[in-house]
Image (cartoon, rainbow, N blue to C red; front, side, top):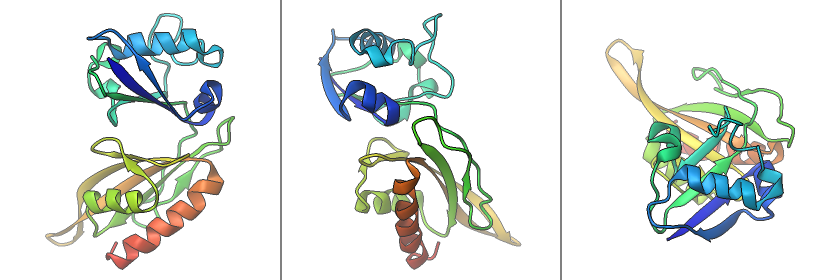
Amino acid sequence: MEIELRFFATFRAAVGSKTISRSFDDGADVGTVLRALETEFDGLEGEILDDAGELRPQLSVLKNGREVVHMDGLTTTLADGDSVSVFPPVAGGNGDAGTSGRGEAGAGADGTVRREKAFRGISERLAREYLVNLGGEKVGDHVVEGPDWRTETSAEKVDVAGSMQLTEVTLVFEGPPETLEPLMEKFGRKAMRAGG
């Protein structure tokens, strides 16, 4: 079976490409794919799995846009045509959703940062459509990936006055700061026009 593999930040540099395809035996799982990658690419050896063969902390691995830790972890089975995205750890941040909702911690070793921003009055579906219009591609129910960025979306109902509620969509952007600044600004303008 053919699996599409997507890499970001330092992992992309180690592989030398954003996307590659590899063949695996039918029924292979995520762990099998990750072990094969560590063997094939010197720059990935020991970077994805720890000495016990477990996924390293703060690493994000997605099957078709969904975190494998929310599925069966490394034993999540794959099928022909599935995609596996591998993100190295990035610095975290958390913004205040009631104000600008923007947070950032220091940049990772590769310059990648993580920023969070919340918007009220737009749907999560519309937020993902805006990200696609800004050059991204939907890779799962809650993930949109761009050329050198990734955004994960979530939504919840929040009380605004008495019994009145609005949808609050939170976006977690990951990528180099020089990419995220204009991306977040453009997204913010689209969300404001929609009432967010």
